[in-house]
Length: 248
Image 1 (cartoon, one colour):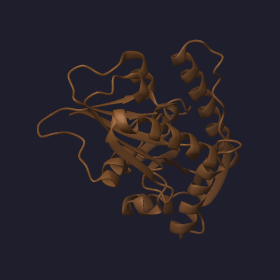
Image 2 (image 1 turned 180 degrees about the horizontal axis):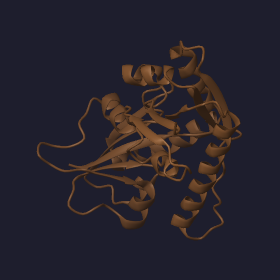
Image 3 (image 1 turned 60 degrees about the horizontal axis):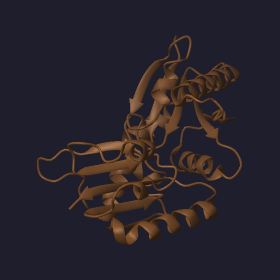
């Protein structure tokens, strides 16, 4: 019997984001793997532990933790850095699964949804032998952001684009759209675009008890968001934020 690997979308850290399908899938596993991301980021592992403690009723399901490899930022080529990192993570997964050799059904709890700006599926494809993969969808931070602000992503019949902070910083406003959702921004890339006529809906830790949201004209709230973001990162040791920009 080949390994059955289930990638379970868990939303943004709020146990109430879990779907009934996700809860059933968690309780069907032999083993759930939880990554640890190092000093200052134990909150992320603890959230996964808390979710397991809240919804697991199958006493046969084991939980194992592993140290997530650190990406080597010394490599100049971005894509090569990411590929090498993914290879290292896959190797750590493989080792953790071997240690628990009796586990035929293994799950990873994936932040948000495995399909949106997440590499879990790409890493899983590196496992050898290849497992049988099942994906359980989850609430994305994009959904949690629009819900927190009670707003919509797109205007009627209009497109929007989801991009990263790095691409917004390097390439500017994407062509052909008036609405841009930005994820994986390491540092206020919205400050690199002309603010006139732009409205921003920003959120950090969206959907969690620590949630912080700010919205308004970019020209008026950019500094507030940057300062709020810096304080939140200092308080928690990590930050996950996302924002929506629209031309008005």
